[in-house]
Image 1: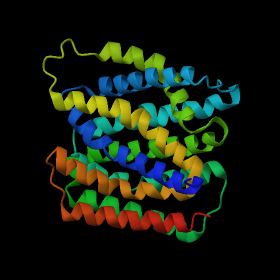
Image 2: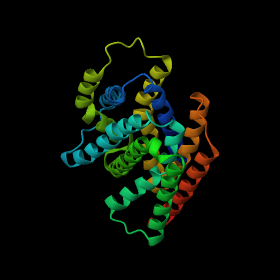
Image 3: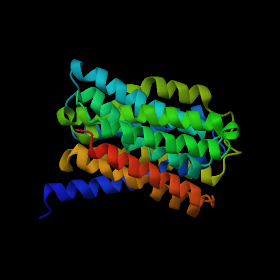
Image 4: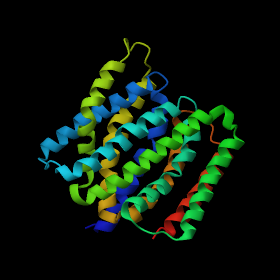
Length: 288
């Protein structure tokens, strides 16, 4: 029988692979869908599925003290990251945005430090600054005046996502893995459903197959199924340990963007992402 730690790493790995497809799928979807409608629709679809799972397995309701954390998770990973990244992908390619995803583990670690009250060593902050410098340098080298809006939106998306991951990881210890994202989705369902109806296009005739597939992917996999594996992996294998798997996400994303969207992945993108990953790994090494 597989031990708990190994199972945690496998579940975490599956979660990361699923998340890696999020930006390419979002890129395909925003070609024909408005970013606000896409954000609201994916959250509403996932929330209805999450509610069905909670009712099916008769999960306990969150207590009052858990609601603020669930609200943070909802604002971070249900609304913030999907909307900001969808807006960003109107200006930059999914391959370009993947460079910023390389900073997600670092951002999650920073919020983990803030929320957990830990005192990292000075080396941690040096690695953090170096990683940020790599990304800023890449943006400037690639023509920051052209993609500044997209870059800023992606940076904001990563910040709120890191906060949502850190808060969700804390809450997992109390509420359970997949239950956290399910309850966060249910909490966000009323406003997201209203927003989806208000921003729904008058006609879907112009929507192509790639956009429909993108919407389906981000609704089912990115918004719900990925979190089932991800939070379960964190709970089984340890948040700090399994969280390292996020470092692989940009590489999987590059491959998917090149395979399905025919986007060009330059050596500069790969080198900058690798540099960011090295910096994140160093920062995580000295986080405690």
